[in-house]
Length: 252
Image 1 (spheres, rainbow, N blue to C red):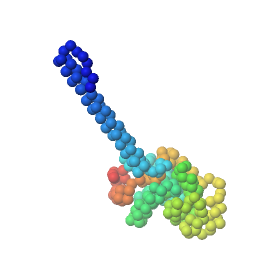
Image 2 (tube, rainbow, N blue to C red):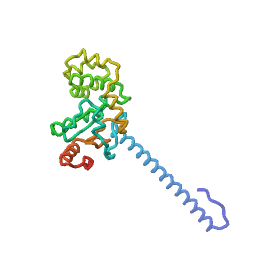
Image 3 (tube, rainbow, N blue to C red):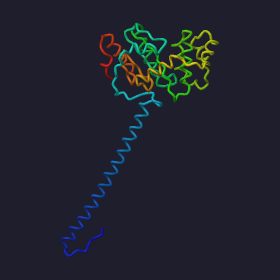
Image 4 (cartoon, rainbow, N blue to C red):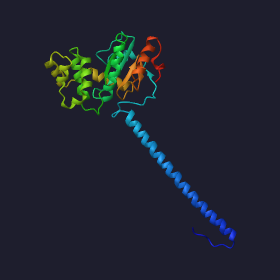
């Protein structure tokens, strides 16, 4: 440590103490800055990891803390978005889907399980929302509608969700055959058509109107859930509706 020549031994000692104190303060400051920097890096890393784990690539999921919002006149707005819409069941679930979205395929299991438990109380309606980052999503949506023209829409959706890895080969007639489509010639002509598919156009229009940007998104009896409820919560939502309570009252 450098000392300063002074006229008093007492002043010299005090200056030494001051310099020593300054050095200690500098050491502590460096330690604080280091800890702060490490903490910031950990927080940033945690946020990135959380985003990767809980948000799907290409906006296929959203954070679970968002509360559901009610869609006014939802029956009127939603009835034109799907060929399979039916309002006779007390529980109405509309799911905005991208057939190439892996999160939609996973969520399919929860919805199928729910419908198996409540075969007459729950109606599920699919609304097309093919996302631009999924290159085969639009063609898959068209293929499902072409199968629907022969009464095999839902069967086709099931097979498409189960065979997303095969989309690059674009052998839609294979999916149609597996889904039980009777006339593959008519089906192939439909798939190869360049005419816009009304249900896909309407699905996108409705998604924009309701500010839905990712899949899967569900609307349950008029309540829009940005993050789709899991199997256990879905069950409690159904129970709430059957008890004439609001779906929004059911929390995670």
